[in-house]
Image 1 (cartoon, rainbow, N blue to C red):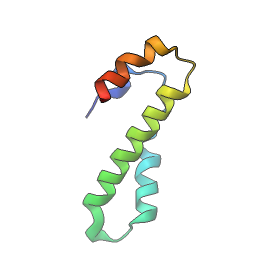
Image 2 (cartoon, rainbow, N blue to C red):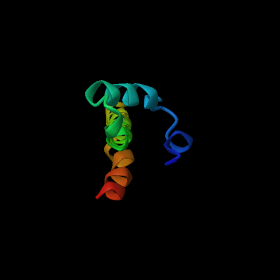
Image 3 (cartoon, one colour):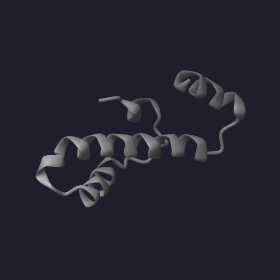
Image 4 (spheres, one colour):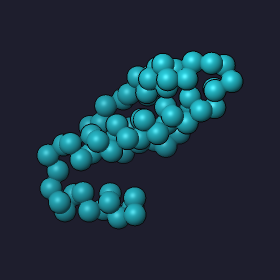
Length: 69
């Protein structure tokens, strides 16, 4: 629901991979909320990794860092 794909088109869409990683860590039914949270965090980390992994200049990365701070 963040809409990151609409604003940051060069990142990988890894939502399904993130969820399956969470399922591999916590597969019991009572951990469904934790799986969703872990998948969201993993997806966000992958997106941030893509942002900083691209050949971006410091000037292009400064606004993103300011928003995170």
